[in-house]
Length: 103
Image 1 (spheres, one colour):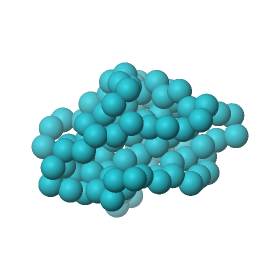
Image 2 (cartoon, helix red, strand yellow):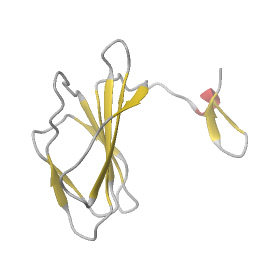
Image 3 (cartoon, one colour):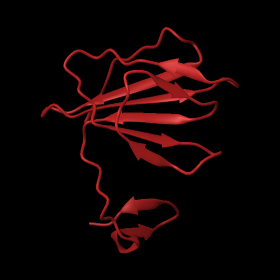
Image 4 (cartoon, one colour):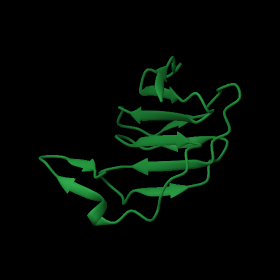
C-alpha cells in the first residue's frame, strides 16, 4: 500500500489514507479533541467493509461500516476493505522490542 492524499474539514480529526494497486483502501482517523466528532468518508470508488476502533477507554472492536461514524475523544478509527485475519496466534509474532509479524 502507498499513502495517498486525504484531508478533513474538521481540524480535530486527523486523517491518513492508503491505497494498493489492486483496489485495497484504508483510511485512518484520529480524534484529537476532548469531545466526540462525527465523520463521513467521501472517497470515490471506496467501499469499506470493516471499521476498527482503538481507544484507551474501551476494548478494541471491529464492526461493519455505518454511513456516519462518531469518533470518541482520543479514539483511532480505521476504515478498510482489506480482509482482517482473525486466525492470528501469539506464535505468529516474535518479540524484538516491538511486535512484528513473524515470517
